[in-house]
Amino acid sequence: MTLYSGADGCEGGRASVAVMEEAAIGLIADLLHWLCVHGSDVDEALDRVQTRFEAETGAAC
Image 1: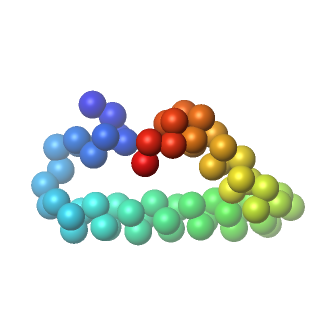
Image 2: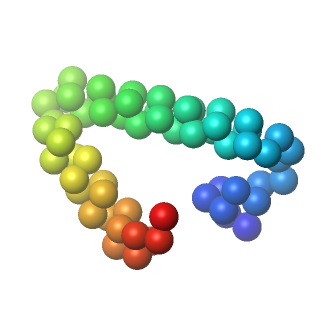
């Protein structure tokens, strides 16, 4: 079982997924703000993240 699988034993169904999705979006936004403050190109970072994600998952999502 992994944290990514959604099989973490939590109850709540779709509502929990929606809450966790919003938390993930907030986390990503915070990371993008941090990158921006430290002079990184946010669009380049997002492109690199997308490439890495697709390589790791085979773009299965």
